[in-house]
Structures are given as structure tokens and as C-alpha cells.
Image 1: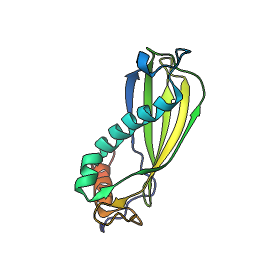
Image 2: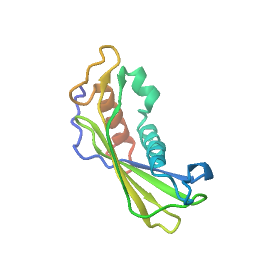
Image 3: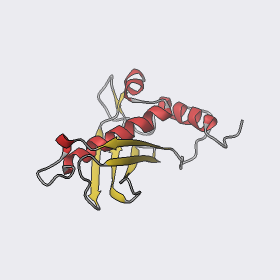
Image 4: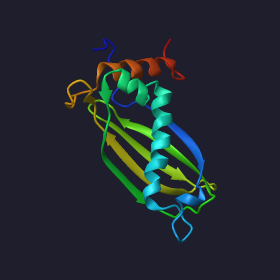
Length: 152
């Protein structure tokens, strides 16, 4: 385990901007509800890549991180061909990865919220790992040292 204690709250977020394609629309011309999980996934990948712990690094580190819970709340519809910004925020990391999402339209109005929960599963045994794996702690510590305003 890492010798340096990490804060329980880590201010880490990433965002992606997407254009809703026609094939994502339902017959009413708005983004079909199931596609929001793909939009969340794009933002989650940007967040994990920012941390230096994307899905390839997770597997190399010996863990899979399946999603065990996902929620979404639709506030207002988004039409196809709309530009949206999806923000992903890390809100828990010690025993699971909980990531919250907000989707904003071109005017900056929030259209959708949600969250996902992922747990670490050992690639070798298939068993759930209790607590944050050392590799995650190392990546979080390295990110904190690089973050703006971090102590040298």
C-alpha cells in the first residue's frame, strides 16, 4: 500500500463534447434514452485517461472494473445534431469508483444527470477486491502531485 495517505475527496473531473448523431435519435428526433450510457462512457474514459488509469491500464494492473450500478435522470430532451458536453466527476474511490455525470446542451442548460458505480475484480481470481487496489492509489497519488495547486 502507498505510504502517503490520500484524501477521501479528490477533485477530479473531465468532460467531452459530442454531437448527437441521427442514428442515436428515436422517432421523435431526440436522443434515445439508452444512448446516454454511451455518452457517460465517453466522459468516464476521458476521466480515467486523465488519471492515467484507463481500461487498458486497469487490465495490465490486474483488475477489471465492471459497472455494478448505473442511474440516469432525464431533465430535458436533446435533439439529434445537438452539441452536448458530458462532465464526469470522481466522487468515491476508496472502496469503489463512483462517478457522477452531468450533460449540458449548447446553451449550458443541464439536460441529464446520472452516476455509475464500479468495483475492482481481480483478473487472476475473479473475486471482488475490497478497498482500492494499490495501483489505483498510486495513480491517484501521482495525479494529485501533478494537479494544479499541488504541493511540490
